Image 1 (cartoon, rainbow, N blue to C red):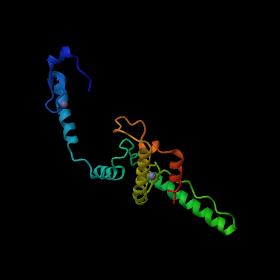
Image 2: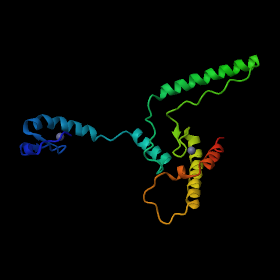
Image 3: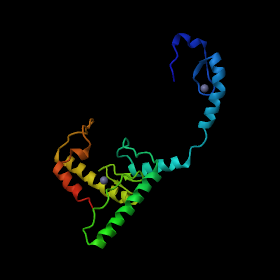
Image 4: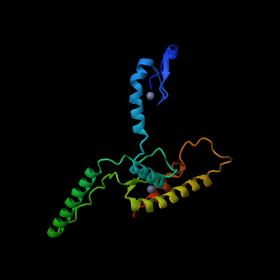
Length: 183
Ligand SMILES: [Zn+2]
Ligand SMILES: [Zn+2]
């Protein structure tokens, strides 16, 4: 990717594989390596990647393309932690029941990388819940956007949007609606 000074470009020959230009002696070394790399890159990419892309399009859709899901990595560690936490809290509940003490509070929801973040409210849900929630949340967001639009007369289409429609809605109204989303 390093740029070649224009003055020397006449001494350079293009690589037949990648099209970059190199000095003759460099090209001799580069050519076999480049072809090897190029062949590797042309291998069909994994179906896992395809599936990930598919779900991302399904769940995030056109809403906030910049808010991407975190990479799915070290899932086993997260699952293990969740598992341990679940057992621990279950034991505490059993113990509290035996001793007649008030039940301990439920464990804080861990940030599970498997969970899908709602693009509207940034809360995270498992796959099944996310599907239901986001449909609902999207409606709420659209309603807020619609309300913001109708309360403020707009003569022509706004070219520059300073704030997303949801954020432009009345704050107290927004909070009240969000509160009702907890189930
Ligand atoms: Zn090359
Ligand atoms: Zn939401």
